[in-house]
Image (cartoon, rainbow, N blue to C red):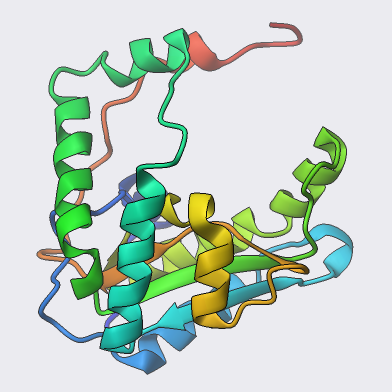
Length: 215
């Protein structure tokens, strides 16, 4: 397996949301995907419950069906942004144009990604308070980010998308996920990247978002 020569800081600062640079025509070895999941399982989880699950969809017909549900869900999701989020998003000229262009590209080509990964967590939190919500998601998100970092280290690109969440029940039926007891978090296309060089992204100054002792 290819492992890129990246320092820890380089890995953390160059793991990008990859859309246009996914190589949709190059197969991904299932053993490589398995290795990324193995690495992800070293992430911490609340009470060490390890209730995470990764559904990896590689069958062309099922990928196409999942992509179609994702497209339908994307139109039903909440795309609103707060004033602060809009200000930050549009602060870098051209950044949001790239995002929308990438989203259109994914919409047209999601079914072509060699693998679609649906990370899940056991235990639904529908209607529960913020404390229970935070605890449950905190047991999944570190593992998913570890999966994405591992993918980058092995020359793969990923992007977190949530088009499935508006049609979660239909996706559960398609993939055999027990909807009543398991929550989905995303659909993550995975493919080799076109080139492996990525750079840190423009971000707002740290002092704009860093608060010491109080807001």
